[in-house]
Length: 69
Image (cartoon, rainbow, N blue to C red; front, side):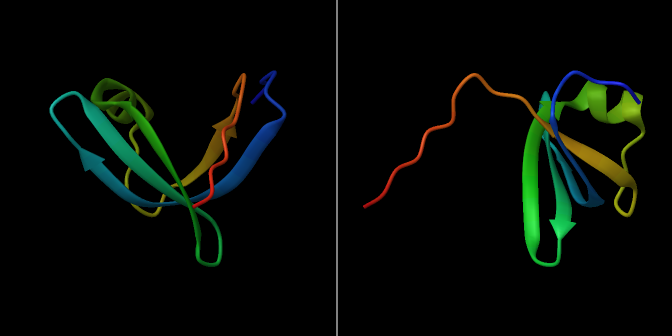
């Protein structure tokens, strides 16, 4: 796999929850650390994602916001 993004984290799919058009895919990247991605149902089908699959969380963003109480 070649990709321009530099934040590529290998993990394991622990949940795939499809909605009307969008799915939430959770990838465990370390013990107890989970990243959730919102992708289309078509993307889930195209990638053939199922629980237990090895996958990569690819993070590419123009900004990241942080808030505190």
